[in-house]
Amino acid sequence: MTIADRWRAVQARVAAACAQAGRPAAEVTIVAVSKTHPAAAVREAFAAGATDFGENYAQELATKAAELADTALAGPAQPARALRWHFIGRLQRNKAKLVAGRVALVHAVDSVELAEELARRAVGTVQPILLAVNLGGEATKGGITADAAPALATALAAVAGTSLDGLMTMPPPSDDPEASRPHFDGLRALRDRLADQLGRPLPVLSMGMSHDFEVAIACGATHVRVGTAIFGSRG
Image (cartoon, rainbow, N blue to C red; front, side, top):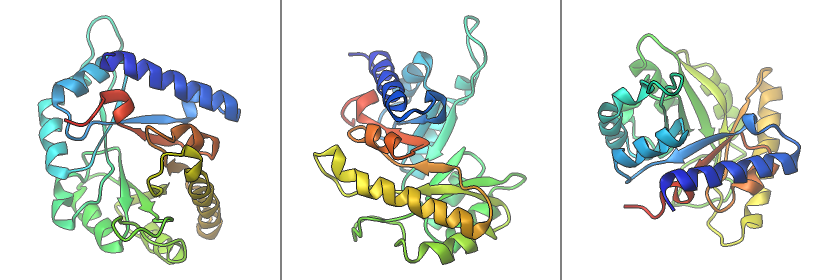
């Protein structure tokens, strides 16, 4: 299958999952995870209809963004579409300058210091961010515990120059997609509590990947991060 074929297959799976959950497909953004794949693969996916692309490494994102700067210009056969970048990995503060103000969303903020650095670097704009929550308790992953989330959410909401738009999580790996359901349900419940605490909406739930995004959609995901199902195995 080509990248275009796989993209259309993922779109169909998302649409089916949304229908099953009684949700409009337009509520779910597919973030095509292009890390380690060449810029040419991003171009192919964009031509097939993908708009949002996720990268895990700041330097790789900056390099691809420069190479694909013209991709926001549509061809004569279709209306203009902008390519939107998402930073989905653990971001070091000294790399924030490569990301701030250049991406639609930073998915994994887990400290006030990182949010403040993003705000400082996002000159003339407001950088949307998500609070990363490690619901699986895995030491190898970033993110904070659910117990620590209320205090950090309050602190992040106060950082001028950023906008706390929601939460993200990555469950422990499993061959069974249903094993992710408690984590997805937990993130949605936590988001609802934090929204009540802050007195404002937190509309974004970034959760679900190639193997379990249907379960994530059933649990309320607004952004699913899909790499292998679109691009194939990593290069």
